[in-house]
Image (tube, rainbow, N blue to C red; front, side, top):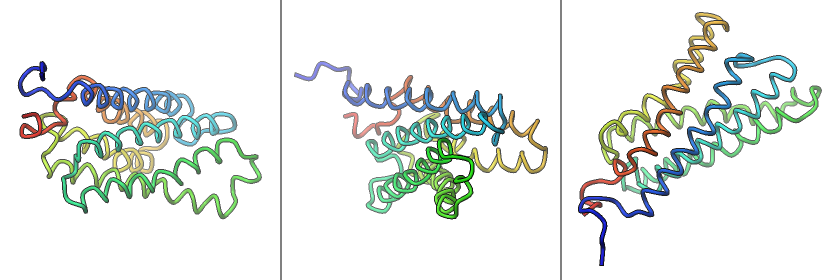
Length: 204
């Protein structure tokens, strides 16, 4: 007999989405601190700390995309699911770049093959933004969770121009603040309200 409250998602779903949301927040915050302390690029050890905390952030993105896949957040069509799977593929070389750039000797960090991997960083962020737009139009996530991914996934379109236009001292704070307001908050929203990732029809 199903004893859960009417209209509530299964407990297993709630727990999974809650844990994935907390994972996103926990993995985002170290990169926030690193950006504030060392700037988005950093020098010496600060650069390596930035790379490795960025890797943590990217692992958090895997958690977010996993939550989106489990709930078919971008829609139920094959193309909508493929969009999320492509993002997963883009994140793999982006993560590999962050790891290698953080641990390799200085003389190896300028290698051409590493620069090729670096291309996947902006591509993966563009992919996240595309997901945010598709998710908002799909309307499967409800309430604030319908729109907050678009806020979070606009990070690259806010942080990078801020660095160019306002310089690093100001740009680092804008980028770090956007990470907190966007991805870190999105994780908390998922943890607090996992039921918003289930459509009324699926809740039954």
